[in-house]
Image 1 (cartoon, helix red, strand yellow):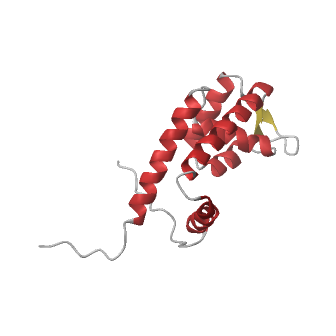
Image 2 (cartoon, one colour):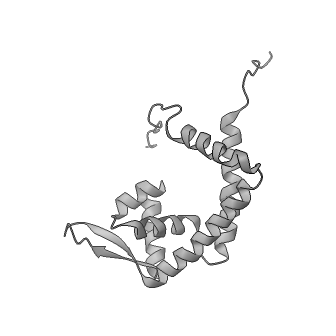
Length: 154
């Protein structure tokens, strides 16, 4: 029996491999300043405006358990703290400390450098087009159904 003939490149595999490679480079570079990509992402989004842990998890693409662990670690390191919201007493926000702001600034310089190095593989005139196309693909090129959630085993 023969495999069906492919009519397109395996775009999913290529995007996954490119993302994996870039994520590993970013993790290695941020480790030099004792941050993870998750920590950096949470710090940056928390600095933008007052946000709850749930809002930050959605922006960072983290599940609840991973988010709790990330914020716990940020608190342990003195980079952020959970506080009552100014606008809603029932809500808890993630507030970045001064130490956390300085770490996020240093981390952002690293993120920008790593991304710049990755984009340097493209001719200068192609970079904006590539980013525009990638954004289109990520945001609205092929909206589909929600991810399949498998039932938990008994």
